[in-house]
Image (tube, rainbow, N blue to C red; front, side, top):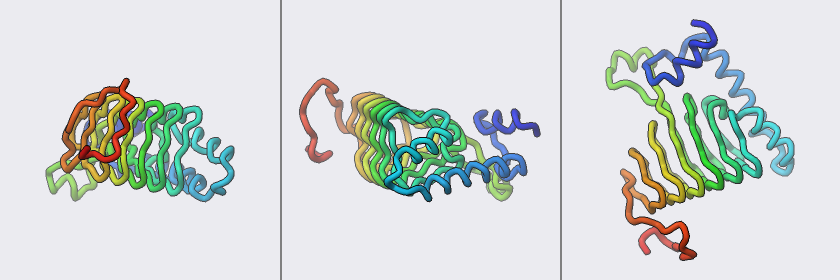
Length: 200
């Protein structure tokens, strides 16, 4: 398996072996970069920004991720938009692409997963997995403790309530929460109304 086909298989949606020696070696190098980021001085914003830009496919202007930060590939396949922010304990299972738009906020302990495993126990015994990309739009707020599952898209201007498990696509300008996460109501992006609690 050459280096190009390794990358292709991660993004193909096909079942593959993540324990392939070539894949594992590259992933170890990425995890070293992640460790270096988590070991930085919290006050050294310039160094942190430099490391994030080296780690991510795209890391936007005025964007920031608190430490600790966890990611399978240290953001290698992640687009993190301009002005976006993630609070501490962000976990990205970023075995394929994650797109996070501009001015989107992620609360503490958010998990975004692209990787999943087949139903067949025989394949799982071999460590088999496949990946589905995740898309999060602009101006979203993903509250604390939210889990976003593989293949999900969340539209612009949407709020996902704390502790939700997002199993399917959520349209733009929605307030959604629950397990599984469901749309509760439409939000007018031009309204100055401040929502204090999801049940209001």
